[in-house]
Length: 166
Length: 166
DNA sequence: ACATACTTTCAAAACTATTTGGAAGTACCG
DNA sequence: CGGTACTTCCAAATAGTTTTGAAAGTATGT
Image 1 (cartoon, each protein chain N blue to C red):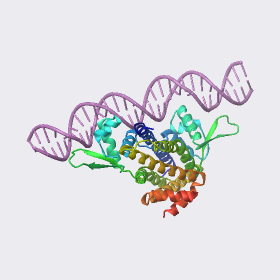
Image 2: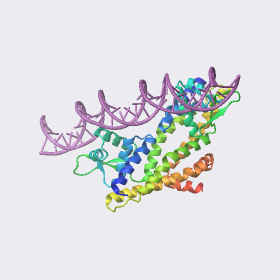
Image 3: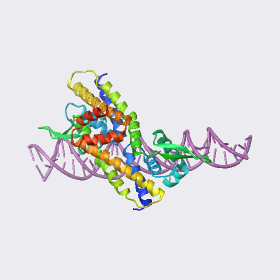
Image 4: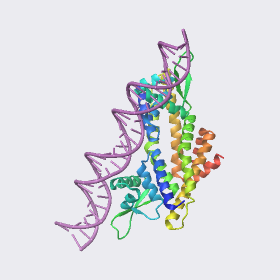
């Protein structure tokens, strides 16, 4: 396969993949583009290569910086900013995991913790409390595993886990 | 907290949570409602309790059945169908994981496998191939861990993983 | 076969999210 | 200070997704 074609496929696929994961298409595409660029790119470069507007490029670059997936870099003698993606895939995975855990999982664990203390003794209440309890238990376990696996080293974790599960 | 309030909070939260995870709001709400119902519910019940249309209820019930999160049950002497959610949270987690792995992760692994064989020797090609290779490696490891952890028993896996990571 | 009780489909409408592009803001330099 | 080179904001437009509701379809019992 030719580079140009492969590049394009990758950017499109990463975009589609991202949108299934709550990261919008452009943001994922910008990320994909930066991931495979050997050199940092300017906002202008991103706009051109993806055919998106300045506002869109800017907004998504900022979002990627928030997620710690992209860094600003300054080139000496250049006024404008350049952007460079974190290239270490383990760090990428860790950052994404940590961010989503914080934004989505933690609030759910908190809510379930409250809900399992609902009052009532009839069938309906019992079913509700049981479910809240079980889900709280499950989500906090997942939370704990993710906490540890992002604090320490994901690579090690995945290796260890694959062995464990063999 | 009172049952009615708690129930409502749970359904709303599960709906919001779901939509961040690529499951649409109604589908997640229908799921939440069934999760906390001690008895199977009919389409009509779901429509009433969530204030959604027949078409919507029907569509999402079918989708939940596809995901193996809900079963049809027939009551003797009743013509209409009733629906009942799988209540074992470990099974729920396993089914969701397996489904998403199949729909999203596996195609990405396949694509990256192809892309890492792109031709070219210049800087740009090298950067591209390196990234495709690294991502392929990462995604296939994740795939392998999920494969094993859903084949065997998630509960055991999570316990083992927490110990491992302590 | 017909009536009844239900399920499924689908095109239009409502709603949500994303994208654009111009205007405003900021920083640097001579 | 004014000009230039950029970045950021934001309201309006566009695109995408979900929901509705009525119509069509299907199964069951008499």
